[in-house]
Length: 330
Image (cartoon, one colour):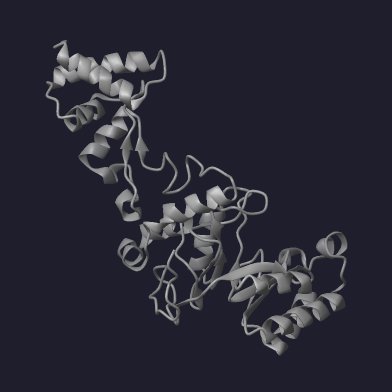
């Protein structure tokens, strides 16, 4: 996938937010604040590292076993190494809510003194916001964080991450306002397009979303969820008769997002006991057949009855429609 050009200016990505100095940044990756991990990450050719280390009493005791003086020493050593390689450095504390406030201030004062490019405080929205999806609110929380003034949001493709994952995006990258931005997003971008459709559709290659999500899903051997925002098989699928009728008349009745903006298509699921005659009529017309509304309503009743007995495919439904027309049934 072609990379976005570095240094390209952008306007505000969120309505009513400050809009200063937004540019596109290259690939960065999250790693433990550990010299061995940092060296391996540098070898992959990334443009920057986000160094993360736990600072709460719980993580210091049960995760890495370091006290605050050791954490500060390690951070300084690793940051200096990354800087010596000419790479961008972001430093983040982990489990910040449960960390001692004085410890955090001491740590960030130390890393600031040696010159990190930016900092993140995971679990908060001071500069960088990391939103885990344990309660299903990651994307909503991330969007609110941006509205409240957060400058960075951590995201991942399909939301893949620890436990239930984090905010869904188009790439394993950072969504960064007022500072840097690496790639366009998926789930969060879907939320944003509702707020500013023209800006988002003009600025981003949204049709790339399905391609990259399919690629990542195959690479990590998972399926794209059937109800995944935008790219899931059910994202723009309509089954109930009342929905299908309205969609055929005006898609905005039940679609807050236009599938065409993302290179996707809507689908009327007519081979169901929940289908309505308007959906069947649309399919009859797609097949180039002629049938009165009264006959279509009778045909719909037959399809609904058969779908209640066994699973019907689209080919099954088309065969029923054609046989009904050819037999001249009424």
